[in-house]
Length: 388
Image 1: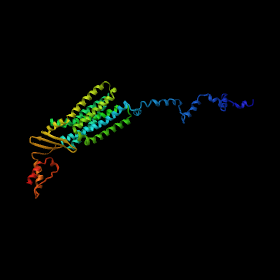
Image 2: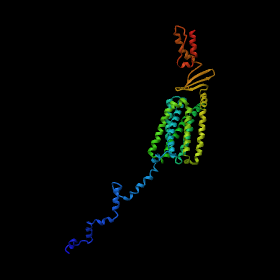
Image 3: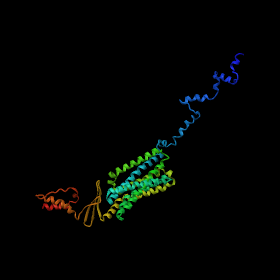
Image 4: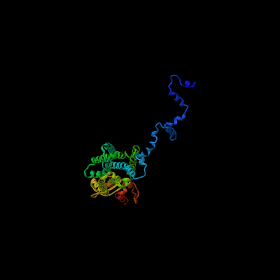
């Protein structure tokens, strides 16, 4: 009786008494469901999650992500899709190589036909690079079916660049001028080449990450330019000459188009047949021109020099040509007249007679060195006259 009033304060809430009494009884607390997730949190991770409901959702999301990411697609086993990507990247190498080859062919032909090689190379390079900028700008207006557009441009570059050298020499021989054909051809090739790289990057932008795409396309592009700059003077021109070099790379451009048609035939749909037909027809034209390139260029040069060409050979250092018109025979090196059989004695005898006249004994033997060995007849006749 004396303890009951001491436990309850006057004016206090009767419900507060059991609450204060529950503080010393921990047996009533486990009935609430909250301790269960808090007990499991330390077992999953060292730090407790603020929202335990999201924990079972996060482990299930990563497996679906790698199937759609470009990086995982590139790391997948080799298959038709990855082969197609590799073919597109190699086409960037081909675009740069062929484009630079066509530029060098045009500049070399211009210096051969017009002279002043410094001016011709400078103008051709400037025209080509500015045309590439125009082509890159025009690529933004291409919206649909970019793969088909890329293949068509590849074939067009092969035709225009492949026939560029023959077109220049024939126009100079039969039209009397070459500048309009020269700069229009260079501008056309530059515009088409400028279209190709942006279109190629847009084709692959949804399948390859942007960083990898830019790095790989530009790497292949610059490596192709290096290959062209080394192969053109050291291998292609000495073995094939300018017209055939251009035709070979025209065939390679068309071959790239055919390979892409084969790899992406399902994506191209019904239009692949027309593309293959155009590519095969272009290859036939380029191949026929390659077979008859020597005869075409020989006929054009006979028209240019207005004489019959007896002999022509391309060496590592120069192009040797012998021509005959009536009783006159000429020697030309790189298209420049060295001497003619009509008046070559004036040059040779001036070299031989002073030396022979200075001898006190008759001349029995003579050694002729240098360019005169090509035409020793006049010199040898002069030495015989003095020996007698």
